[in-house]
Length: 113
Image (cartoon, rainbow, N blue to C red; front, side, top):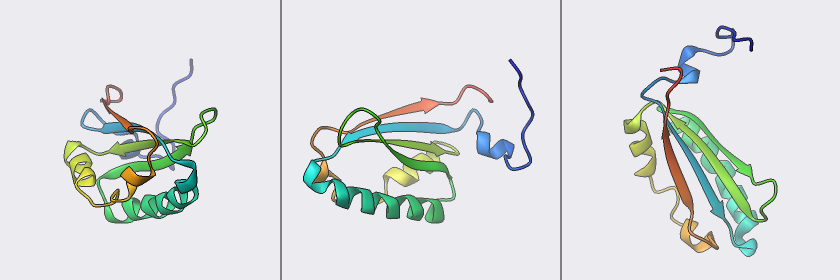
């Protein structure tokens, strides 16, 4: 295995450290709300990156094999940045769009520490 140093376009801050929080969230959207969800989510991603300086990464993926299912991948510099995000009113419509309970899991970064 070859391990390289940080590239010119990547900083050590981009990779995080022991304080970094990663969140993986999975949600299944009602088919009749899916188009609206995707449109709102695209605007949300932009707003989070513009307005939350403690957010390292905030992206949405469509699940490759589960219909109407989306996966959020979120990285925050620390728990304070994560708490700042979850206290925002971004998801007011979300309960109406969900066809099942959303599952969000929080992970603590081990390496690099």
